[in-house]
Image 1: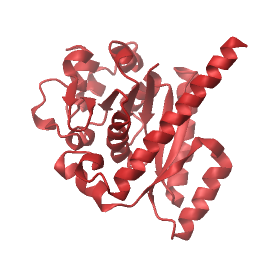
Image 2: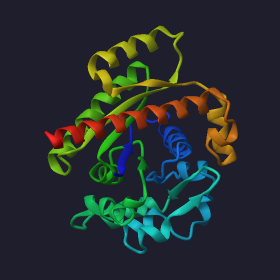
Image 3: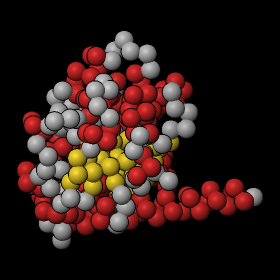
Image 4: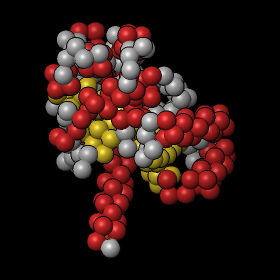
Length: 266
């Protein structure tokens, strides 16, 4: 069963694209079939996957505007281990072209239905804003995965994101869940980090992932080489943290599927 996750946070600079690329590579390393969608017109997930965003023959723009099929736009990233639906600045035009189209919120969901049965995970790297693109991601997804820093302003942004998720539930996707929260750029020596972590544990309980992503220079360097940290430096703290995250995610999903089967039998 395919798990479709929108990796999102309306606050920028929280490690959202870093998480999308490195989680995709780490899940692929656990022998899961993964499709990464770059839904951000900046195209950073595309570049970070080793694909030249300036010379794309087809991209997510063409998919959303129905100029090509989903299959035609998928790019193989053998070094990273996953497939990619790339994007560049053209994606901005999709929002303009679809603004008066009926059912525009369902474009991505319908596009993914063409290929979803091929993958264990589909990860969507969302733009750092509430736009038509982000709405499409949440409508198409089963759950939202939220990377965040342990700082005061991140908590403010999290509150706004929760309101957005609830609005999407009411309007388009009543089954949308919070998959989990991931603490990024984590520094346990900082008092505020520990304070915010305690608040997150209190309010979100087991939705807060045990794995934390440390500040790590290799995670910052890897995108300039067009590869995930797992390829750039497999032994780095950042790469090992994302491998741990992939393992934790796989265990959680196995546990949920087992619980679902028990309920079906009862």
